[in-house]
Length: 146
Image (cartoon, rainbow, N blue to C red; front, side):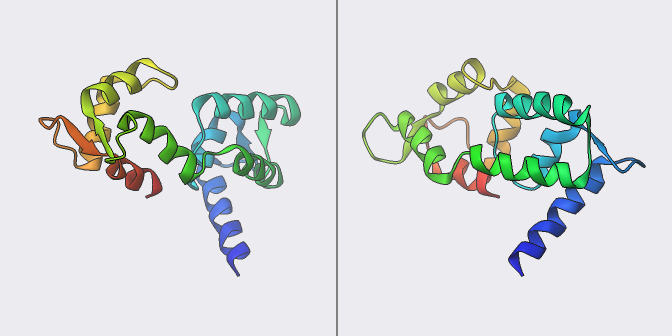
């Protein structure tokens, strides 16, 4: 039963990316994977797109898409890995709090960098009061899980 629901979700995500063809363009792969809840870095998405370009000539059938969903499932970050990353900002104090200034600096300058507008949207979505110095990182965890 759960497998059927997952397949229906994948088919819906696939169909949203498919204008009127029976294939989706590989450039839409990341969007489709994220729409079904796959948490991948931009680097992971680019790697999968490149592979899809080579293997599928840029156009993915639903069967191809299912294969990439399975591959994405193997490389996506788990809740534990994401929480571990947030704990880095807790400075070993184990209070569950992160310094907003440090966090904001990190997400705009390291790894998959966010633009200031994206940071503002992230903080707004998480209900973060930017006038505070610290915030419980679980607000961001909950946002990522949604």
